[in-house]
Amino acid sequence: MDEQTVRTVALLALLAVAAVWDVRTGQIPNWLTYPAIVLGLALGVHLGAPGQPEAGWHHGLLHSLGGFAVGFVPLLAAFLLGGYGGGDAKLMGAVGAIGGAWLFALYALFYSLLASAALGVLIMIWRGQTWAVLRRVFRALWLLMLFRRPADPTPEQNQLMVRFAVGALIGVGWLLAEQWWGMGLWEKTADSFDRIMR
Image (tube, rainbow, N blue to C red):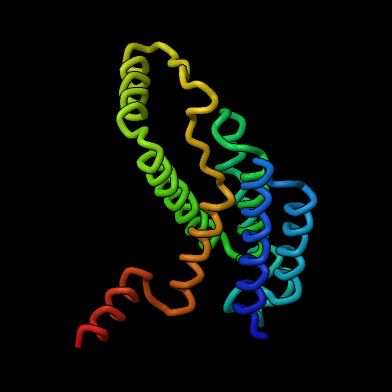
């Protein structure tokens, strides 16, 4: 297998297990994320940097460490502020390390957050909570403008629970598909649709 295939298989396997575990338990376990981070760094040493295997093992290790940092640090900051779980940060750190580049980690994080937000909207619509959620958001924004800290009055059973690992699986899968085809997924879809219509 070539380098990109190895990284792709490792990423999809990691994210599939994380998504199933996150849906079942609400957590992403350390027994999954820590070995995945080590695997990502080992791939950096063994395969080198993506697209630059001739640069040497130290170059690959530095790129994997950069990918880890870009994936891990933003969600660590969000975790410390109470926005995400620690497992989410470690999962994205592992994704960045396996991806082997800081730019891949940045795109993976963006696509994962975008997919998680889309899932949140779909769940909100499915459960018929659109107006209730929008009212809470506008109330929270109003209180923030008044320099008051909004409390979340939502009962536990009515809270929207989007499992980040599911969003990461969708988002990173989307990113990998774009890399595989060499074009954006929307462009590929439009191109396929155009061929069908001819």
